Image (cartoon, rainbow, N blue to C red):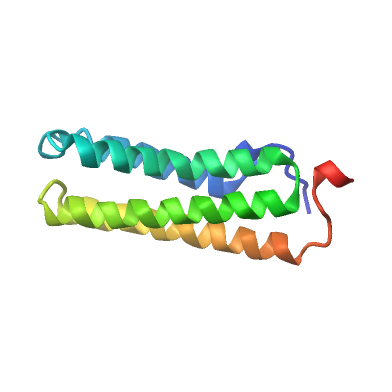
Length: 129
């Protein structure tokens, strides 16, 4: 099994980046563009997912990494909730809604799987090698 040496190699981080990019694309839709509050909130939430994965990884301890992954998962739930609001307000199409929800669920599942895998490992993290 290969050792991951940088957060950019994590599949979950790549998926979180894909979600953030998709959110930015959605929030540029003309109908959506007028809701500045929701745009700001959903963009911040989507950016938070990848950012917390990266920050937790760079902290160098198992405990902190898991904590930041849970924060990222919370942000993922926040994005999913905001996607429902955008859809209910008619800002995005049903297809865009389904794609966004699917990306959110995939990211959340990957986060959970990584949390579970890290919890099962016996190492304390790079800081305590």
